[in-house]
Every structure is written in structure tokens, then in C-alpha cells.
Length: 333
Image (cartoon, rainbow, N blue to C red; front, top):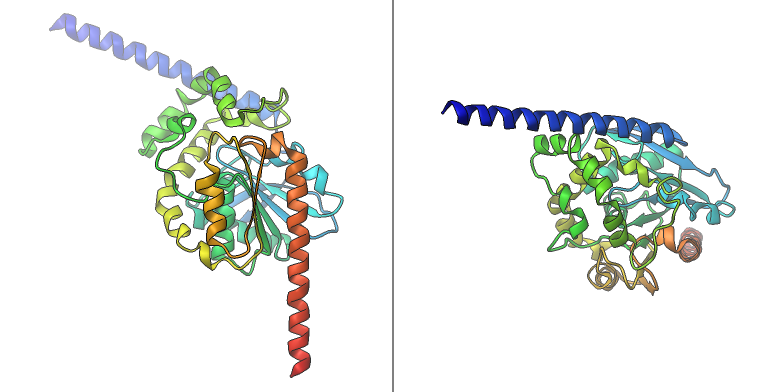
């Protein structure tokens, strides 16, 4: 028995030492990343969140951009916002809890949408075209459904729109239901494991297209190597089953211009189950399928910018017709 206890204590000590070393490495890595990629935008306080954003402050119609799971606004500033900033006021935001934004409220879709609706008010954006990529597409849809007076139209890039039967393999590590275990993993195993498996993960997320060599810095990829990023992504993923199915049942009530752009070789989300299925439920929805994978804002920025600009033009025409109808109605009285 004494030998057994000695072995147990020794193993426990080794595990504790390994956990401590992992925690130290995680803290060191997070600090290095923060120093290398500090926030470059401004912060806006809204109820339940402190949001980090980049605002081009252009004089054209407003566009609000919402990134996907585990991402941040650099996915758009990498190469899309610059193509639009001369014609539009483009605001790219770190979703609540992501990038350099923080959140005190929940990770569910309605709560995130409420924070972004408040941001629209704070920035004085008049019914912007809302662009959503991946999970950001689900948030954009929640924003349009719950706050229809805040949204002029939707331009969705490889959006998540329907609950999936299975989580993509690259995101399996995020499926930790226990908040305590999730936090323990975030501060011990998550970052070393992410570094070790980064090549395979990025190959799956970007494939069949190549990962740009500067994605880690210019695309903000390194920001994922922080406990806060792991926790936010895990919470976002865990919150989907409670809100996305109910949202799906409301898509038919959408009355704003809607465009959907998908890569036909997307390895993360099925364009039929998410893009085509959404278009079938919304009257007048526009669906486009192009060559490419899931990370269209990074790998196909010109196609994304053209698609967004076309949706913005359609929105302007729609709003113009609406004003004309109002004026005609008023004159008739």
C-alpha cells in the first residue's frame, strides 16, 4: 500500500508540474501575442460588452462586418475593407468576447445581436448592410430578425445558418460543456495543442486554398493563441444549440435584401445545407457559388468586395424605392 501511495503521489506531482509548466507557457505566449498584435482600432462600450472595431469613416452608405468562430476583425481588414473604403463607411468589429472585445453577457445569438444593435445606435449607422462570415452569418441573421429596424440588408459569406448534426472535426476540441473544465483546458492544454496542430487545422479551414504566409500577423491568426480566444470560441459553439434552431424557423419572415456567397469546396460548412437552404426560405434571396473554400474574405477578397458592393447597391435601390413609395403615399393623402 505504501508503494502504491508513493506512486500515486509521484504521478500527481508530475501532473501538477506539467500543468504548471503548460500554464506558464500559455501565459508567456499570450503576452507575446498581445505585444505583437495590439488593438489597432477604437473601443465602444455597450450593454454587456466592450467592443473593439475599425471604422473607415467613409462618406458612403454604412457597412457592418461580423467575423466567424475563433476569428476577429482582421479577417476583413486583411484585404476586403480596403477595397470598399473609398465608396462606403465600413465598420469591422470584433464580436463580443472575440479579438480585443470583451463580454459580460452570454454567447448566445440573441445576446450578441443585441450588443451589435446597440453598437449601430452608438455609431449612428443608419440601417447598414450587415456582412457576416461563417458564425458571423448566424449573428447577422439574429440581428436582422431581432432588430429589423437596425438592418438594411444582409451580405453573408459562407454563413452558418442551420444547426449541424456534427461539429467539424477541427472544432471538436472546443466542445467542452463544463465551464470549469473549459477554463482549465484554456490555461493548460489548449494553446500548446493549438500550436502543435495548427498546420492541419489551417489546412482544413482554408482548404482547398493555401494559407497565406502572412495570415498569422496581417490576418490576426496569432490572436487565437490566447486563453480568452479559446474560451470565447468554445462558449460560442456551446451556445448554438439553444438559439440557432429557433432562429431557423423565423427565416421566412426576413424582409430585407439578402445575398449569400459560398465557396463550392468549403470544408467547414456545407453550402447546400447552409447557403442554398437559407435562400430557399427567404423570398428574393440571392445565392452565389464560386470557386473556393471557407475563408473567402482572406482567399477571395476581390470576389467578396464585389459581392458586398453589389448588395449595397441593391440595398440603396430598395431604400430609394421605399422612400419614393412613402412620398407617393403622403402625396395621395
